[in-house]
Length: 197
Length: 179
Image (cartoon, rainbow over all chains, first blue to last red; front, top):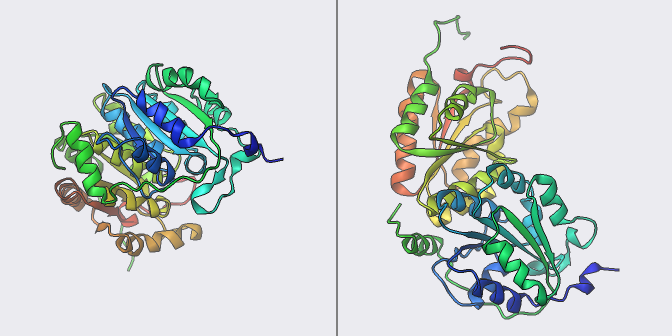
């Protein structure tokens, strides 16, 4: 039996609720669906929309967290991208930025490419992997009622922290933001008060 | 043509380290290589610098981009085999126009003893060029410093991906167990 049948969270409702409480945190959404989710929740120059580079959401968020220790940073990724870049959790643990949180939207499938079954539908457990890599504070979320504890973990608890949210496979309207990477990066840096490269 | 034994080699690692410090590059991502040993030791010993050890070199493309987004200059140092791990990920900093400075010590090139290194070693420059990285190959120890400076300034002033390829002729082609 596929575990995904027990996944209930509606990704758009859930991510909108999480982002509503980000309190100025900078967000690095992974390519594809997490980027569409962010944009659907309301545009912000503090979102670095991504259309490519699978596996890089966590490394990018790590770099940003190291450069901006006074700002909270959230990597918002999916299970496929997290598994592709799973080694980066060891790098995060080693660098141990207190301002970094990771939220994995886990629908146990490659939903962007046709809902092919993903590895977290079977035996791979990202929270356990994260603990093994040295990220002590993790949380598995299955219900909207648990978002209070989640928001605390993501935006208040000393990092690095990681949460996995079991989301349903849903048909969501594509919400496509700006795709000019240089424009996205420029806007993001401007929001931090940084000038041109 | 064989090379006769020469005088002690010019210390290119110190030249690169000085250029790193002069440009306020404060973070270096790496998967180590024998040829990088001296430079990595200098970085590790400098309390104002951060060394980020990776699990695979492609992570460096994200970390370097994230650091730049947050206003910090950084670079990545790797062996030539690691270049192969970076190819798709190189689209990330380049699309953002984030500077991506790569220091690559070559294998599979000059008197390589290990045939398993040759496939990637020989492909490094054409593959990097194919994905838009500006390459600066250098085969004299005295010229590594100035080449690194040129590549660094191009990367940081232009928001470009650049790579300095340090020839195995400089590093030396040694067998296992040799120091």
